[in-house]
Image (cartoon, rainbow, N blue to C red):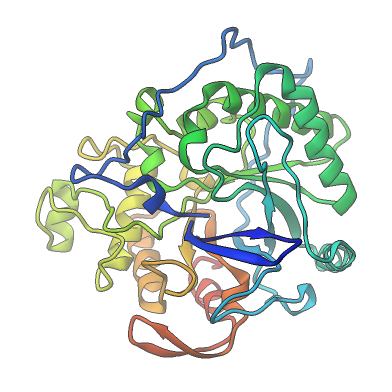
Length: 382
């Protein structure tokens, strides 16, 4: 996802790749992320997960989702999308971002017009949409919380959820903070408590995650920045995972023998995020090796396909290695052939999909408003 860090008071923007920026943790020739001395730190007393006496598990929900990220800063080839103009196919809207500015401080959500956001959320709720707060962005060192900050973090999240009448939280951590096991445990404990408390009141608190792909390898749990601790801690609680299939900077999965034979590829070759012609196959292989086929060549942590959402940048201005109609159709047909049904699609960002006009997108010279929503309706919405 394209990450834009903003100083809201001065409206000074720094553009970086992100809901991505793999470039901030560049991959080496062996297709693994560098850790920048990110040796995992662990809690001195890990403890157990906080649960009520009769925990209510996340219900199995076979409905499909189209998730779109929203923000209120600007840029080229995008618009500030009004909530009442969002295409109806989007049934989950993630607000960007709840983020900490320095380590061991509480995260803040600072939209430029809070009243407008609150009124927009009321409208979205009237249309039966869910609205989550996305926690993180290109945060690097900042998303760090110590062992005695769990209650404060929990209350901070609850305050934002209450003020804006939100339905849950999306974890979009990036960079070296993902090597801080204490911070991950504290955050997991805080949102588990919130989810359990809501469940006692017959309310559902959504928990989703948006990891960058290199942090999904099993080996990362012991060697550096990793989402695996979050997956393990939140396994009974999260609703879906929407990894970022973009800004990969030539990152990609190794091709196993079965897929090499079936797709006419070379065994052991890498299909990268930058391979335009094979982007649909890239989506397919990553999804397959992450969910329903264990790949020894890639070593991904295995996730539940029913709780898996493909996250694609809307177009090239939104994030390198973007979606296009043929790629979405291709991955849909390949998964359908394998009789695999995933949860849906995610895109960074609504601001790009709501744009209409000239664009440079892998040879595409114009962008038709809500094209990504249309691609979803023609495929994974079925």
